[in-house]
Amino acid sequence: MRILIADDDEIALAMLAHTLTQSGYDVETATDGRQALAKLREGRARLVVSDWEMPHLSGIELCQAVRESFDNYVYVILLTGRGSRQETIDGLSAGADDFIKKPFDPEELIVRVRAGERVLGLETRDVTIFALARLAESRDPETGEHLERVRDYCRVLAQQLGRQATHEEVDAEFVRLIYATSPLHDIGKVGIPDSVLLKPGLLSDAEFAVMKNHALLGAQTLDAALGQFPQAQFLRMARDIAATHHERWDGSGYPHGLAGEQIPLCGRIVAVADVYDALTSKRVYKAAYCHDVARSIVLEGAGSHFDPAVVQAYRDCERQIVAIAARYGVDVGPASDREPPVATAGIASRR
Ligand SMILES: [Fe+2]
Ligand SMILES: [Fe+2]
Image (cartoon, rainbow, N blue to C red):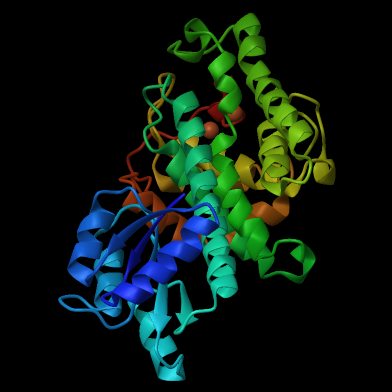
């Protein structure tokens, strides 16, 4: 892990460098804010410990510049003179992550740097999850931004459920996890041959049996990872989602024919988000339906295909759902002259 330290006081700089290298960190130095920004742009360090007052660009200005122009998250620890309330407010407003009072306590510095590493680690994990999901999806050229939309819908649905007394288990952590892991729902599709995955039109019974296998394949892959890290909640949720997003409330889904609350809530949420998105997107086997048509199919599925509580949440936050869809260029106009689908059951599963 490489850390950039920025301070115009050479003695302070040397002391910071000494403390950090002693603890095994790789250190880069800058003697003013402008130089620090240039070094951060080179992308070698993702954590910076910066003095508050520096020539050219102050610590606060450095912070603002990083937040305004960097795609990657850089964790910023500011060294403050007095540690006053106003300094904290100014620093947080500029986007600082943490503060250390000057003269710094070496032990405190290391503890705060470690906290920063943990935050960066979380971000890296979520980026990795998404990259894996994207890799699986890349074989299917028509799904566009399906993963982004599904995770956005899932977040809105989960937040809505969490507001109800009946769903106390849906807390901020649940919402964060479903947002991070829902893109993995179809990870098992890496194991489905192109002849089935990319086939235009409906699938034969044999082909559908092959396609259905993606739920089990995904679950098995994530289960193996969970075996290595049994404490990892995100792997548990990812596994549950991959395994159960095609189960149906009435027990007619696959792979296990689970019913009602046997299906984990995360799977029931992804089911609604995934089907709604499949309906409103163009696929090799179907045209895109507008929001109104997709909506009526979702509502019709309450109690049969979908958990009625999740469908209720979908109704309650319909405006947010439409706003997300519109942001991704989905046709959210009225049904009007659009031909409604003939049979609604299983449209998203090509049967
Ligand atoms: Fe799926
Ligand atoms: Fe999907």
